[in-house]
Length: 443
Image (cartoon, rainbow, N blue to C red):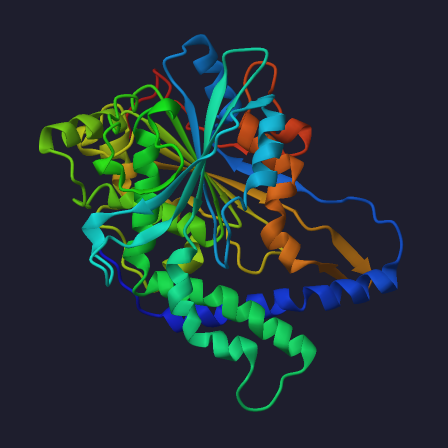
């Protein structure tokens, strides 16, 4: 896949501006709350536009009737340092909503490795972060789910040491306390974007690629136990025989959305695999008939597309993705459902329009977009003259929002669950109008 890395400074400046504003959030919030010191009515809104999409609930229900398959979810974080276990609270909320009230006591932890991207100073493949897998099931039914949490931020830690001295502020004049806090926050976050758009791209996407490989591989019992360093294709139980039966979902945040989409698109062009040709073609054949769903929280795709070349194949959805498309045998996925969440008060979040998919997402992954415009942060009036919403909450609050969790679990609903987010989101469905049989062709 081609990677043009021009115009990084513009994106970085924008990101820096946002993060500086986020660093001021505590001050702004304190001032606003001191002024308003009163109970505020929740006026947050949620609007959806796009086609139907299934959530985790529909996948679990289908597998409860057909025990051959498993629902699998991969979580990919965004900028700033993350430690393994960062998704625990969100994961537990999700499991509660899904009524998966049994968890296996074992947490399978894989220190990721990929020999095809080079070796470290000791001649070993570099570590690419940590993948933690937990297994969840229900007392009431045969439903079960595997939750994969990827922590890729260790990849950028070594490069970020270059500016630790600035965070510590041991050189030159001392900073004021507030500015010191803001600069430390900026130094911990913006470099991840710059590293990914620069020399760290291959390692970070390899981290997601290895995680997807482990999702594709065996069932829970075939995964490595303990805390070991493993490359997926070298593990003896990597059979990948269950790809056709299992369902795959991704939950991504901020920069994690761009990383995940880049990795999925690379399936079309990347030959980095240790699999023999016949086995690789077999897996590609199974994936070609699969639907993947990506829930993108605090989505940034349009911003992070700036300065990048478009994928090799664009604007050919009909040729690759329709039942009668002449190139359907060459597609990568049957469908990539993208559900893009954005809070208008998040300065660094953008809705993804249909023409973006046509122009900037590889047609061979067959993207289908739904946008969710949602007020995650509460908006407050200041003496009726202005309004204020916490930009940090607008960027990070998705994981605690019941409406977001409802859309991930139930999708747009079916059967008894017709209303998106339990009636708390309005939905304008996008659906093609069928051509009447009596319509006469236009000259």
